[in-house]
Image 1 (cartoon, rainbow over the protein chains, first blue to last red):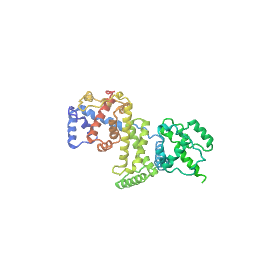
Image 2 (image 1 turned 60 degrees about the horizontal axis):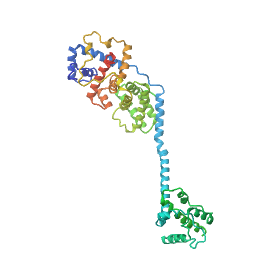
Image 3 (image 1 turned 30 degrees about the vertical axis):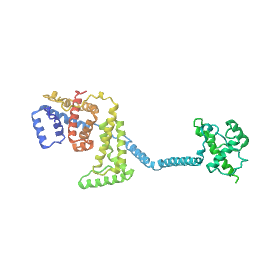
Image 4 (image 1 turned 45 degrees about the vertical axis):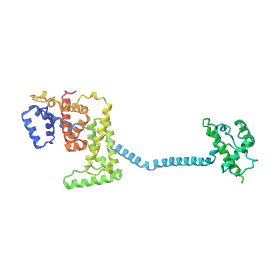
Length: 219
Length: 208
């Protein structure tokens, strides 16, 4: 009840709803007995409550029940769908990622033994070399497994002036000496890379691997 | 779908409660047909309470659909502590209030002619009616009263409209309203009183 209000309107409202205890009911009845405006309020609130109760409400829209049923079916289908429609693409993506990582790791592993022989920056420009000659080599058919062998191989290449040649000259040499050997994928890719000096040193690495593969093939 | 029969005795009521329990259990296991029976039985009452609160047909349709979708998803968590109708009403009232909150953010509230009464506001809207033979409401013709009532109900703050809809239209007890709206019993009582007095002022043409 509002203390500043001499009319217990909140109590009257609750009294109309039959929600008062005995004590509060007595307070309301005593007040109503001596207050005409509150008796008028009771009449008005009764009219309004009745009107609110009887206010015409539009009937349930036609087709609403069917629309709810349709949405339930859609929701049920959506609940079922994730079990396989979501898992399959997720599994595929995860598998692709795993395969991709494995491929990268395997490549790194294959290239790893050659990493210490990366040419210094001044040599890196020379190192963008294509395949060495495929034939007429003393070590033909021997895999370049050890670092010593790799260094020896490099020395031999330098002695014949191979590593010191310009790019254009090298290309010509390749065209003359090994026309049938296609450049390895790594080499083809590195030609387009102008910013990373390390990448320029790489062509030598797959070329040795590639040539070793070529050499092994006849055996 | 068959309408529920009238419960003439406690035994009948127990049978109906058993039927409802069975429906709920089946629906909770994903039986859509069982849930569609629940929808058919409770749709009219849910529609009424939602419409009374929103007073907008399209919004009410949207909310009623959301109510039953929410109920379908939440049914496995329904423990049966409250009656199914009360549980559905709670979802309906919550959803309708959420919709009203969203709407009230969009609509300029300045357009509302009714302002909530302050706690210490002692202005007595009934004072002007004292010593009159008939109150203005009594003098209004029924048709005009209903027109004004509909207009004024739409202007009431959502929280007040909710208690009015639940009490005067749905005949819910204060305790049920408090439970449905998650508010204290005293708040239900004061909100109802304020809502009624504001509605009366509005219908009498004093607040608009």
